[in-house]
Amino acid sequence: MKNFWTAFKWTTMTALYMAISAFAQDSLREAVDAGDVATAQKMVKNGEIEEIYCGKLSANDAVKVYEKIFKAMPDESFAQCPSQFSYGYGPKVCSNAKTMNACNEVVSYLLMEGTSGNIGALDALDKVVKAALKTKAFAKPVKEKVDTTLWQACPKKGKDKDFCALQCESQADSLNDEAHKASCATKPEHLVETAITVTKPSPLYEKIRTGLMDGYWKSPMTLAETFAKMIQSSAKALSIADIAVPNLGYVKRWAESHKADSTALPGGELFRFCTAWQPQVDSTLASLEFETRCPVFEKFTDPRDNKVYKVKEIAGLHWFVQNLDFAVEEGSMCYDGYDENCATYGRLYTQEAAKTACPEGTHLSGDDEWKQLESFAGGSSEAALKLRSNGGDDYAFTAMFGGYANKNHISTIMGEGAYFWTEKQDGDSRGTARSMFSTDKEVSSISVDKGFYLSVRCVVNAQAE
Image: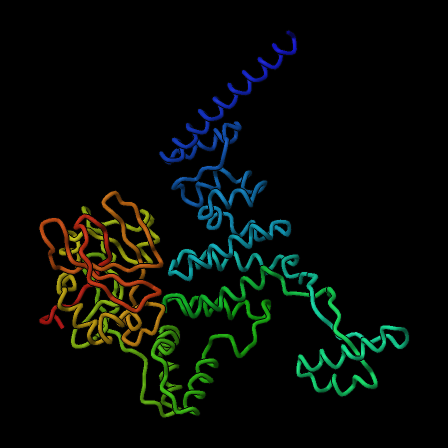
């Protein structure tokens, strides 16, 4: 009876503790969701926590609430709060020789965000990479056993000698190895399966090296210079060959190669170079007697907030080649509600807001204007290849894949899809928009609920040109 009572009390106390913990966790979530950092800090300090929850805390606030937990449990912390942990705690975790796995996760996350076009991610990545490269333990190569097959001398005596000599010839034949076959009579060898230890570069260094190089070529072209600077500053530590580092020397070798082969300069690659080093690129092309030059942009200053937009003449129309980023009080938002996303991708607008958002002297791009653009870029079935920001952007249109948000402000597919309002109606509740994806060639005309939030491209009015 005593054992039963003890077990009963233990079960009851455990259930009560779990109920209290669950209640405490609910309270913690409420505090985090309300942005009540002080209350959340106090609850975590008192141990009133069942699991890490960051919600939409800023990176700095998440560190204030969870810094001790981030330090003690970096892998678990990243899993629960990848964004806040990477932006707020990345440099610290990459300065700790014992947390290479968490640092690797942070680098992967920020590379993904930066390559998709997030400027804030590149700022954070730069600090993280510098911290990682200063942590000597991360530079150590790793030794790994791998299965392989090696040639091994046959026995000089014994019953296996003749069989091994026959193996030598048959194995050399199967590999078309004439050198080994010729030596089978005098120095017979046979293939033996074995395991050897090989030395490989630091996995973290390899991640940074390949990530930065891929980022330079795959990110939106306007970010190419930022990636190039990170590559240049870390090339020595990462053992990146001089000829692979994107700089003016690389551009000259690239142009010389096309000159020697009598091939046209790829527009997408040229624009990537031009966004970073335009005057010098033009000088290089002139010295090699190319007629091609970097795209020339006009500028349009929005008098409402003094933001300056690049404008490009394409097929007779003067297009903004950046998404509009003007805050309309009713009907506009940043992706996920974060201001830094507006800085990268522009704002998202309902169709009603989009119709009045463009500054005076410009207008929301029209359905017919999009058709003209698509036709000039090879037709709607191919136009995305020319217009997207990380593809062959011969026309410098630079479509940014800023995703969209539904009526409930739920944002989705940033970095993958681009959606642009036109002025055209499609019934009482829907409007016509254009969409394209980072991996497809097509520009589609689609019908969208007017209350959804999409990107906006403005066109300069004919009389204002």
